[in-house]
Length: 361
Ligand code: SF4
Image: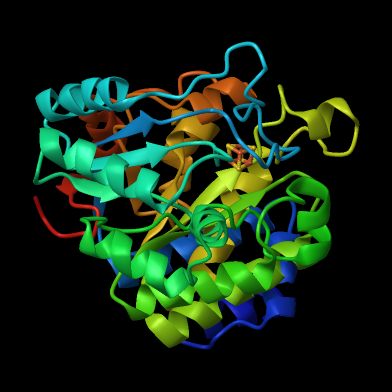
């Protein structure tokens, strides 16, 4: 038996991969890619079964004005830039009404980190949505946004989280993680919270019962070793809190972003890397039940292949995603469950609608 066969069969038997082993799997080429994705697919059957899930959700854009202006982002703008906007109550509630009419179960607030926002702004946003639809699950606010309003108000982050939960927040967003390696963050998102703060805030949220997604944004400037360090941090947090609902793998969309224009980042991950990120996440994150493929970023055909490489969740209907669109993605706005069903049943699997917390609808 060669070493890859031994490693994959050990992983199938419950052996926990080391970071170096995960890195070796992320580096495979040629036919070995199939061997890794196929092992991950078998692991997916053990952990998540044959059902592919999705949530009926809608992104609600709050503002694209952002204090961070990350180099990998095509969405955030300065207040004085052309196309900058910030929706008021009327604009937010118009989007919330649309979501209610579409029978979504989750509203995901997608926003820049507006320098003027405070804890009260966040509470208003939750209330404005719940005034329209009291039952909808509000999924919002990354650790970076939590840190921002905490700093502005001179409040501790656990207090911010507790207030948001009290006021109706359902789950927080595991975004702003990008790559949890400070030397990479200094290049791709220098204004965002450093790794230690991101980890602390996400643990504080989990400990008070506010669960979150986990994310990785890969394919810009980081190395395979950085990717694995990031995944290792997520695995350790999950060991401690069990608060992550899923891992969302987010390939870097390069087209309209400063990092790419300045020649600092490459043109995003290749298809091999997309599939291996799904597969190795499935094999390495032995304490995650759900691995999600971001259809809006990889496209539908790659999404279907990712479902054969360890993924079991299709994220949501979305209805709109200016973050991916502004960075240069196409077809990232809406995925009809009918189309989801087409690619899922074509694989001989079953599509099922879920809630944000993976309960049956
Ligand atoms: S990624 Fe988020 S925080 Fe960074 S510039 Fe874009 S909107 Fe702002």
